[in-house]
Image (tube, rainbow, N blue to C red; front, top):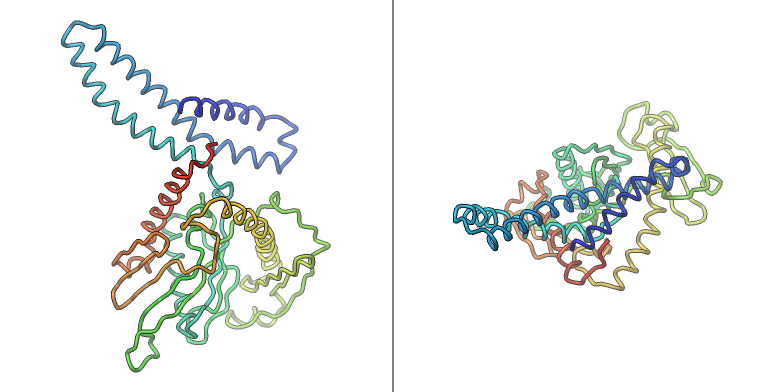
Length: 358
């Protein structure tokens, strides 16, 4: 383990020297990449320092027990060992997890898209419930949520809503939410009291930075039009909504939530970059999936991942078989237990497979 930590320490020092070089600073793409690597290596460097300290104290205590005749000194050394060895074993487990290669996109902000699925109006209402669930969860973590576009349902909720989440390691946490979410409950419009099953799909994309995507604006067609639906007279009377079409790929992005054409254009451009980045990202995921099978993060966004059963107050995550009976808390934004369990399950899979260390 120490050999691996020493390799990390050597690379950390190399990166530390590189990021202050003028030629690196002038190359924004390389500078951003190295800064991200530096930040990701820091926890391992700190763990290495603690590892060396505890190793030294253990060796000193063992030497005392081996060579010292004084019973008081021997008792002190034994107490020291009894205290340090469990902490050292715990540290080794932490280091094993830290050595698992991190998804390079985990530190990015995220774009989240929620769409009404099966169930008609009830599907749109459920999409609205999911939006508020994520909104409350993000607020609880101190993240910023900014709506990019929305298409309201006729009976409430959303046919579709897209929003950006900004903060620390957003994508690495929210990525587990991609997939189909099902709800089982009696709709407000159901007169017979029958339980219906509806659905909504959630897509979480890593937000692409300018350095991630080479976007030639000559390939982008821009259209403006009047925003539809609610939003006030100003929204509907001016051509503030923006539609961008990337001609080579056929990707179309629309944004109409902002009050100005300029704001909508910036947001649409951000989404377009992220969609283009996601195309390449999914290719990489497919290559990884071919090498290893994982139930946690297959990248299949059409997979049913979670069911919210209102009559039973139950929430079940089908990827790891986790069931809780605190549905109101979960819908209220308390989804951390699911994310933590999914993260641990994925790490366990990687360790079991012997995923290459950093």
